[in-house]
Image (cartoon, rainbow, N blue to C red; front, side):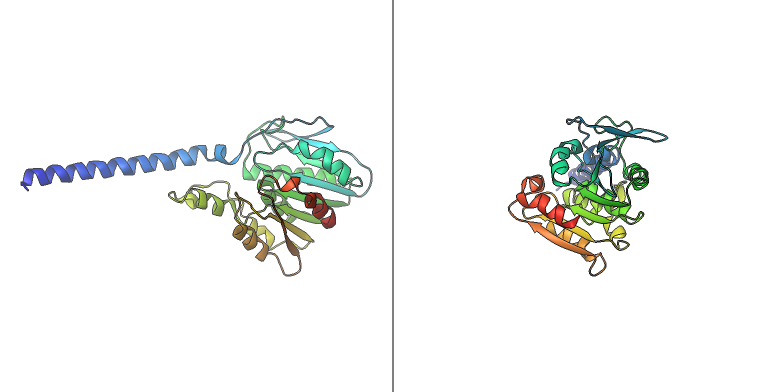
Length: 260
């Protein structure tokens, strides 16, 4: 092959490599900029109920409430695309002796502001402190994304019980599995490393996994379970359900009730 052709081919290959690298870096940049849009999917509030407003320095955070006198209260943290108010009817019936508090994350259900891991953690602390002032036994329930909020809160405040529904070991692990081509562990801002907080939990804890969870691998839930101290947590698998259908199982509220 003439040298001119070899040189031309080399330049073409080099140019193609530069294009591929530039495209890859552009995708990494886009993932960095828009990552929270891939994590949080704000939902409107569908069920009307009394509302508690947490006035934060940078947001007004709403909480759907079913008030009840007495020592017991339950705080619920939902999934990334969940309208938590939809749980009120079933929970009100199942847990008649509990005051109920369902946190609408920033941007969800009429709450203002933008969601982030640190913002949700601060709002959860503020809500717990307000509830604990009136109720001495505060159970925490977190589903999917909310399991990371709940386990972190339980490591910082005197919760009476902890229930984690379809929980994960860390969001960073899940993201790395979903986007294997990208350096997610370097790019991710909201990591939700639940395993870090599980080590500090001492209250009775239930982990509920869906048998056919298509979003959170059982291995991730199992790894989280192994980070709890011996005797603190139990892991139960709800048969015949997936990640989003677990709450439709007749075993769902029964398991919740047994843990509370």
